[in-house]
Image (cartoon, one colour):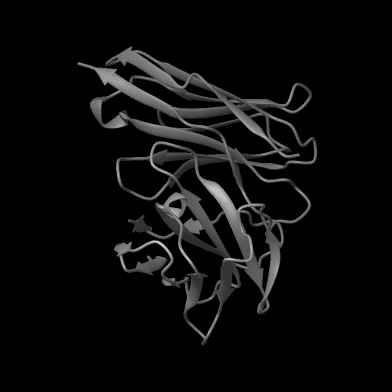
Length: 115
Length: 114
């Protein structure tokens, strides 16, 4: 069964550095999402992406964040200048463009540690 | 704004007993209600979902009920087993698009006592 993949599994970075988290959505999916989960807390929506543009973003997704689909397979989340509070698990998800189909498929996550 | 409340935050049940987790949602347009199981350090895994045109859905030992009028939905796990121990999240979509975000509840840590 196809799966969403994410790299790296764990990223350690220093405060103020830029990080890029990478995701490969399921190949025939057209909607892409990023969520984050601070340790011990709930999963929070960051951004959704369709047709090469952001569909919706949350309050968390400020100017320090950006997303990109640089080629036909990858979907990236960039944090320009990391802060301690960006430490979290970041999950990518994808969904097919089928009317009435709601399920989102989650990747295994990237654990980001900002020191 | 959109919100999903979940109770209890922790739940401990004897193996073989039933567990019930309850959620409420704020957006009356929500029409998709998934439940996720998350083991430590792993991704949320969809275990069951329900659409707004259905009041109840069952899959083996897991069932979900939905009361649209009250904006409540619940997860029922019967004959609990040790492998059911995990954090469970309810969720809802805001309903304006099938591609919309999912709003998660705060999670319930379920422990099964042997």
